[in-house]
Image (cartoon, rainbow, N blue to C red; front, side, top):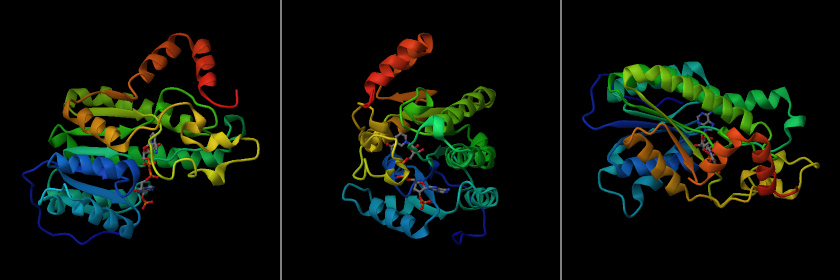
Length: 286
Ligand SMILES: NC(=O)c1ccc[n+]([C@@H]2O[C@H](COP(=O)([O-])OP(=O)(O)OC[C@H]3O[C@@H](n4cnc5c(N)ncnc54)[C@H](OP(=O)(O)O)[C@@H]3O)[C@@H](O)[C@H]2O)c1
């Protein structure tokens, strides 16, 4: 669904950020963190009612500044659909006349065995985690280049290291990482910042039940847990959102959360066999 907008073009004075997947989970936390930094924030999701409820919540919280209701905007579309995203880019250009930050949050995890995965499931995961990001970035890059702005893609620790029972998630998030890396190289000459934020499991109320439908009989019950049962503490969403804002402000290339996971990533890159053993030990069912 497309919201009505002014037919005249204007250029906002304040910076504008677009957060895909801003109507739930991490996307909402990022939208809130950007609002706190005085950005105009456009949250994008498919369900317009969900967007409206999220916007109400974000702008009615006690610590909100008065202008946050004015600075929060919504737009309903499917970011895996080329035509809908083309209209979104048109809307951003007409409504704001600028775009400083694009945070590509839309994505989905998985549960299952790599040895059992179907090509259909790979298609679904790549569409949500990779196509969404590529489509939005390509459509909005001309605006971002005008302001030498930022594109931040939300990866995962699964963009860097495998984890048991995560089905096709590592495949999709590694692909996202590869595309982000190449885009960053290309955009340096245009002074466009391209960052990748790779969080571990994020604490949330429905953690542990989100993938119940995907759990086949050959998986242990622990596979339902965040990170496929990896022994790693859930990150507070605000902490991840603050790291995204910091990535934008300091034009960081890559952020790994928790920071100590970086050591494992580096060591595993040098000693993959050793790294596999450590990763297996970190997961239940070994
Ligand atoms: N949760 C974690 O523990 C965790 C850990 C590491 C990384 N991540 C990554 O962080 C990102 C967000 O995860 P999350 O768990 O916070 O997500 P979530 O709670 O499932 O929310 C997904 C958001 O994306 C929107 N969305 C989904 N498909 C869409 C589409 N095709 N077009 C437009 N909007 C769409 C949803 O709204 P509609 O359904 O209304 O469209 C919703 O706003 C993902 O990339 C995920 O891989 C998550």
